[in-house]
Length: 215
Length: 173
Image 1 (cartoon, helix red, strand yellow):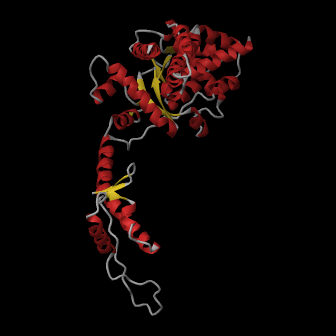
Image 2: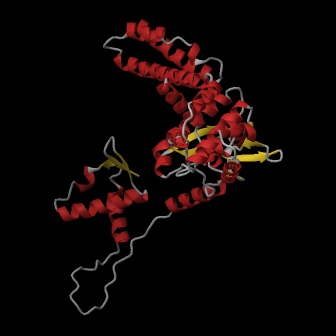
Image 3: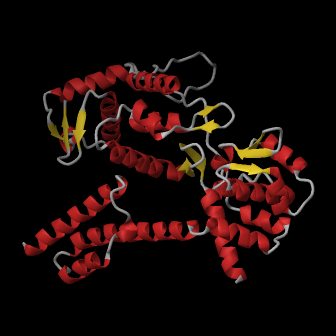
């Protein structure tokens, strides 16, 4: 219990520090992080390892930020003097040019990413999602040869609707319940295909956690 | 549309020759963020955006010359696609370095006479004209002075340059 309170206090402290930094109230360079690390170390047990790891990670992030601030401070100290000192070493043009290497950035600009474009894309996307596709019924054509596929008498959508009507009364039911009476693999596969299409069309829903089909 | 898409639009927009992205104020206004915690909210949004665009090889950066936030490709990609405008022109890079020194020491405006001294050359006008063509500087007052344009703040990571120079000096000691 005492440990939990300490952890909560540490968490709150880290959050406050973040807010203070963002609002410019405090500089990380003025902040002492050693007591926080000591507190984490002193309260660490096998039981609270999980929570401690998270706090330790957040405190390390603060430490990294502090290093960055220190690096910035050091690089900004006596910049003018550094420039003069560097130029006094009489660097060649090539040496100066090498100094620029890795300091150039390619700017990312894209005019097409306008508000209008985003609005239009959003409209188009939602329209595309709404539209369902239809399965064309197979047509037999006179070709002269032997037609190896048998044209079904009923359309796919008709067969699927027939299947849906046959299981309507069972819903909600488990996934296996639908295939309970079938021993023929082909029949099971056919029903499974109908089921997939019905799920895609949203006529039937499925909850993975309970393995249940429902309307 | 969400905050991220609006920020992407604002930060990737180019206005005129030297202006890219948006200032903090412009972004707060576009996102209708008000109240005492607006700065925290704004910083969080930018932090989240930078996390989103990082896998695309992009980063959110700040131009200290005109206080604009903008998007750029990360250093690895920038190097790959040769963002260095002075490749094969070390003379121009050296003159730009002298211009930077001069402008930083004189609140953003440099005298051509001082640049000549720093470069230890009698004639730097041709280089300066070329740098003006690149859009990095502007000649002012009958071409006796120059000033940096915001463009250099977008294309050149000056902090990185200063760090590299400091390290070089340390190695020379």
